[in-house]
Image (cartoon, helix red, strand yellow):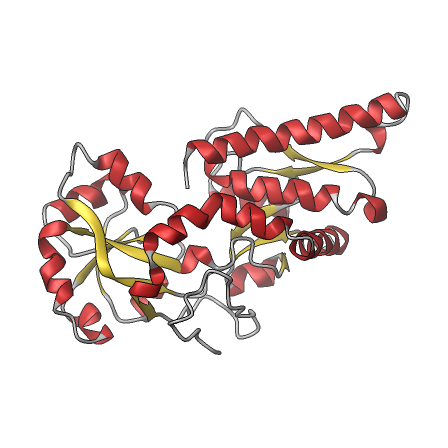
Length: 306
């Protein structure tokens, strides 16, 4: 998800918050800034611009009920904040919100805002392959063949690694991101599942090194893997505010427009209505995690039911 558009949205989100705060100061210069609540997050990378914008708008649109609040980056100089570090900061209440994929453990430890921020798109995966192996995929007659006859490259440290284990795939683990592309190019495994927002950017990025890589033409994977806002377990007020804000953005159409601006072109490029979508079970989710049919789901494919 690292692209120039995401970076532009970070700048836009920060600028919107600063402009709003400046307006408050002009209206009431002696009290305005003390009345603006800062909602801290740690995910400052350009790939998170989509979520940062939603956070900013959810806070803005609920100002009448909850008062003024703006997103604020925690420790902007820290370039090494890992996911584990972010969760630790949230537990310590040093940040107030985090945007992460859903799991039973996270829903137990934190308070989830149960609205899928990218309509479940994180769980849609295309297969990056060596173009010389496309004929093998053309000959696949069943989903089970993808499990029995093909080797999957994946990082065992990534959160959805257990999904592929649970669904019976043969895995070739590698913890170094760049190495996975080299291994795929040299034939050490058969395919590398990549997110819709990642796969073409990565092909462009690695094209000079590995010009033999491409997106497989027939298949896609899908497993329920929504991204939520999470807040501290005790912070019911912020959770309620964000849920109200997101529902208002859905109702007025802004949520859908924001989604389309970020993901619409890649969804169209994927031509999902012409692919066979292999449905995978996600063992990381609780039985209570709602499965909502996303707007991008192709009408030719039945949506999985619990």
